[in-house]
Image (cartoon, rainbow, N blue to C red; front, side, top):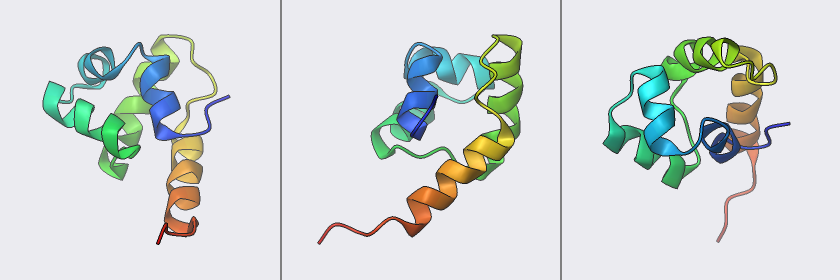
Length: 77
């Protein structure tokens, strides 16, 4: 099960592989990993690439859940 966007990116084998799989630039993929955030505009490509690789737990719905959890998480002071 993926519990964070970092988990999603690592499932692909790290930022470089994730970026190649979804068509994201290497810099943007690395930044997504550092921020533990994937922009909603990449959810469809991410879910499609995950499906092609047999990562059934990574769906657009799961990505949206992760975004909501991140949005509503208490902010560190």
